[in-house]
Image 1 (cartoon, one colour):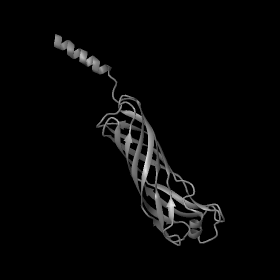
Image 2 (image 1 turned 90 degrees about the vertical axis):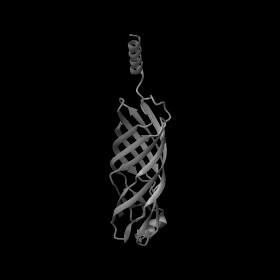
Image 3 (image 1 turned 135 degrees about the horizontal axis):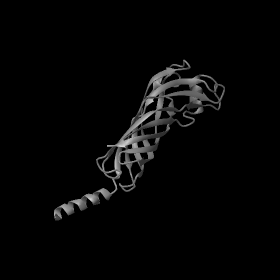
Image 4 (image 1 turned 45 degrees about the vertical axis):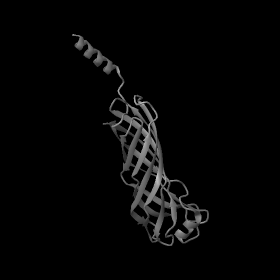
Length: 217
């Protein structure tokens, strides 16, 4: 009888304990919409002038934004540290002239993928439903399906390696499901291949934002 009372008391105590939000060994998978917004003035005036082989005073290169489906997977090494992998469906961007006589002229359309691996720090206690985090990682961006919109002889863009800084927050709806918002600042620098602007440096350096939901395994 004493043993039975002890077991019952232990069961009650365990049931009263809050479920841990994150702990070592957890795998968290999230999916949602990702917006990649390259920085303004991705190439300088002189570079754009060379590229279009025409007068383009006070111009720069502008790359439009694009939204795709993104997915992240996080493995919790400890209760407070995790490793994240970011992937997505291919992004498509068009580079065009901004300003000058050729304002709005499309130069090249290209698709790219920027797979990213980051180490993350979660400062909150493992029992907290709200889990903000910061991260530092490395992205490898490669470009494909290039289309020379202006017929300038552009053959493509070189792959890029760069650092990535990130921050985000997870909110646990229950012990399995969560909602997420995250932002990454990526260092993506590439070069034009082909045309009169062969070797021209282009700093894309996008701000990447994701809103989605996920599950803890």
